[in-house]
Length: 128
Image (cartoon, rainbow, N blue to C red; front, side):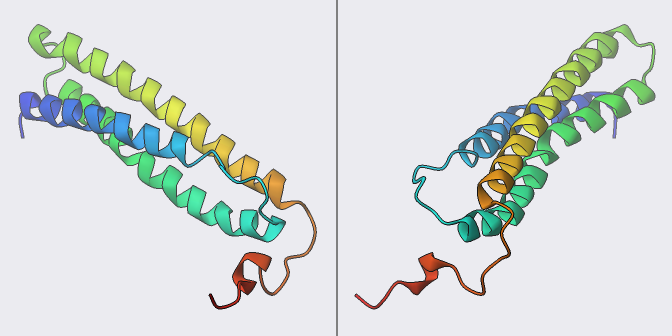
């Protein structure tokens, strides 16, 4: 794989980063604040997975930029785009990480510290 291909992959991943960051940001908000603490305890692993999946595109873009730098370290046609891509990917990683960690901490705060019940009140909905 040459440096140009790596930069193309990095730019495509950086474009996908916008969608993954919006997903992490959208998953942070709760539209219905009337949920029980049990609901929020169940949300913590889900939000951790959303964070992990949201970090894949910017991490891939950063990796592609670093590999492009390593393959052609002093070729001026590749140096500036690689550094710009690396800086943009690092910024996207930081923003996505911050949003995801905030969502996880929000669920942990709303879940409280009481022991987990065996069932959630949301699961006790009767038929009809």
